[in-house]
Image (cartoon, rainbow, N blue to C red; front, side, top):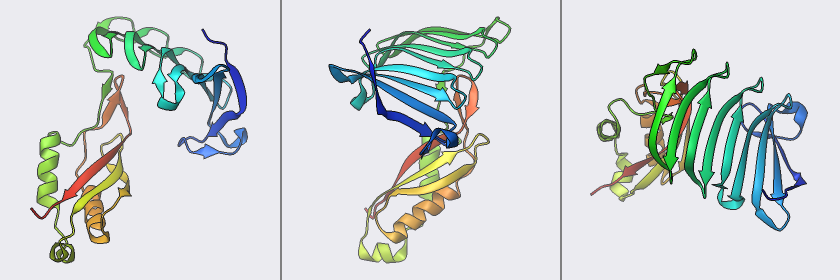
Amino acid sequence: LPTFIILAQDTTFFNSYWDKVNNKNDASYYRILLREPADTNLALESMYYASGQMKSQRYFSNYSKKTLDGKYKEWYKDGIVKTEIDYKDGKKSGKLLTYWNNGKPKRIDIYENDKFMEGKCMSSEGNDTTYFEYEEMAKFPGGEQELSKYLIKEIKYPKKSRRKGIEGRVFVRFVVNKDGTISNVKLIKGVHQELDEEAMRVVTNMPKWEPGRFDGDIIKTAFNLPIRFSLK
C-alpha cells in the first residue's frame, strides 16, 4: 500500500444532515483525508462518528474523480463491521459482504468488473434466507412508464408561456421519505418562472412512491427529475 500523509485542511466536520460545520463540537461525523506524497490523487478517506469510532474507510486511485480502488469498509457505531466491498479501478470486483449488527453475515455477493455474478443472503440467526437486492431505488407506483403518464396528465402548460413559445426542461430535486411521501422539493435548474412553478407543483402533488431500500433496510432517497415542457 502507498504511504499516506495527512494534511490539516483535509479534516472536515459534518452535522447529522451531512452539512459541513466549523468544528468537532457541532459535528455528528468527521472526515480525515490522507494523500500519498508523490501522487495526491491516491487517497485514503476515513469517516468517523463524533465519538471517534470509525464509520467507514475507502481508498481512491484518483480522488478528484472519486475512483475507488481497494477495500471499502463500514462499521456500526459500536465498532462491529457492517460492510466490506472490493473495488478495482472504480468497479466492484470481488466480494461484497455485509453483516448484521450482531456480527453474523447478512449477505455474500460476488462481482466481476462491476457485474453481479452470484450471491446469497442470511438471516440474523445465520440461516439462509430469500435473496434481496443490495440497492433498490425508490420508484413511482408502477414504474417509469406510470410516472410519464402522471406527468403528461397533470402538467398544465402555463398560458402565457404557451403564447410566448417558451419551452425547455426544468430540473427538480426532491426526497422520497421512508413512508414514500415526497418532501424537500427544490428547483435545481429552471427555464421560466411559470414553467418552474408548474414543475414544482406537479412534483409536490405526486402520490406516494415505493421507498428505496439499501441492503434490505428502507431508506430515504433523493431524486433529480427532469420535466420537459414542449409545444411540439
